[in-house]
Length: 356
Ligand code: EPU
Image 1 (cartoon, rainbow, N blue to C red):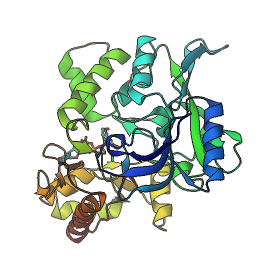
Image 2 (spheres, helix red, strand yellow):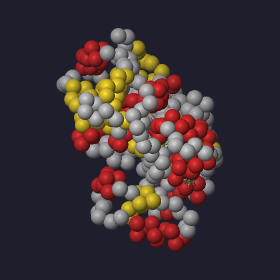
Image 3 (cartoon, protein in one colour):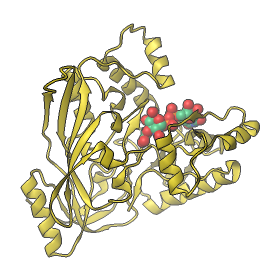
Image 4 (spheres, helix red, strand yellow):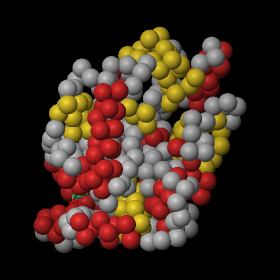
């Protein structure tokens, strides 16, 4: 396997920041991954995993070894007992949407709402990707990961991952310790489709399809995403830049008096747990999730440009890079937005992508 020296990462991060890696490799087999670990150890390099770079803000060059997982096998096996269920096992280097398409082509239900999310399959558990009423944890069975320090393989079952809203152990207690190599998902051959997300249910109704299949739902999700979210190959972005904040229901009710159109919906205790533990708050109250996009939009940032960066004109939650800018420039804009939203609504927005 080749170890490239001073490799540009400009096309390796969807924000398109012009940063580089001191060393870079693309292991496609378990042996090549072990070779990468040995290389990093022999040169005392920090090891960083970079998938498709769709959820990362590069503020500097990476002074270490960047590992881009490149194994791409997908297999599916029916459950021995429950014939409606199918296990799909997928290598970390598979493009997420290719996996979704593979499952649709095999008539499987479960991933249709997650169509077109950018990124590699191996990155999906780290932030428990989610969209249109479904999160990865809803179909997740287990994953294999290699422990960087020892080279040993470990299986993580769903309960080991502590999945929450855009959160897992891979962002907290074991952050940076493992390289995810394979995922196993539990899908069905019969559905049902999940239309719990209001905007999706409405689009399905407007399509006049009476009994939508997984493929129908996927087509509609793709159309919504294409209409609202900027294509990273055309304009640099990392999807949603902030998490949707979760606030106490009594705080929400007070805000609603001043801002009667403030949207919000009640959230599950696990989502509340992850956020309130991080903020050392008591989580024994009902909590509401409010759209960060709405808060940013009301603060007047939508469509605004500041030098080489800005806020997308169709979706206020997506910060964009027009070219020639830096990660620090984008973070300065993020900080400006955070301050305005905090001063206006008393809510602190949390940045969602990882920052290097
Ligand atoms: N809104 C505005 N202005 C805008 C955009 C939205 O006021 O410019 C308001 C509207 O009231 C809208 C509400 O915000 O109803 C929610 O917006 P939207 O449905 O677009 O969803 P979101 O909360 O902005 C979340 C995820 C997306 C996911 C969509 C669909 C987060 C941080 N983001 O966005 O995930 O695709 O729901 O399920 O949870 C990502 O993580 O990168 C991502 C794109």
